[in-house]
Length: 90
Image (tube, rainbow, N blue to C red; front, top):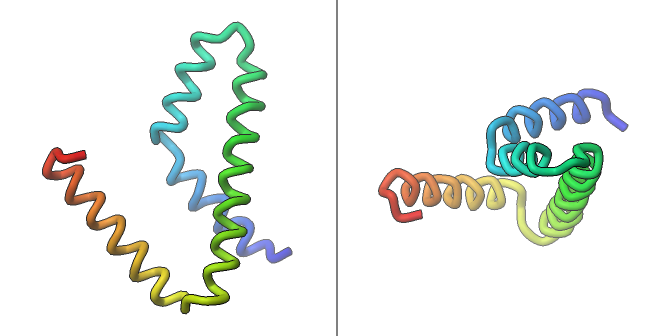
């Protein structure tokens, strides 16, 4: 395991997740629930499973599509989503 990759991934995902709808939803669930530990475990398992799907698909896709095209495609998708949000169409 590469420590640099591990720490970089942690930092990037941690900052990206701060204040997003997943964190806000988890906060609401914890506030409504009488079992915040259950909310934490459920949310943690969901995030781990979601990350596993991303890693498996990312590994499989890079066997067929060059990484530069994946980066370009992801950039285009983010720009399109940003435009939809900016124009109030989302």
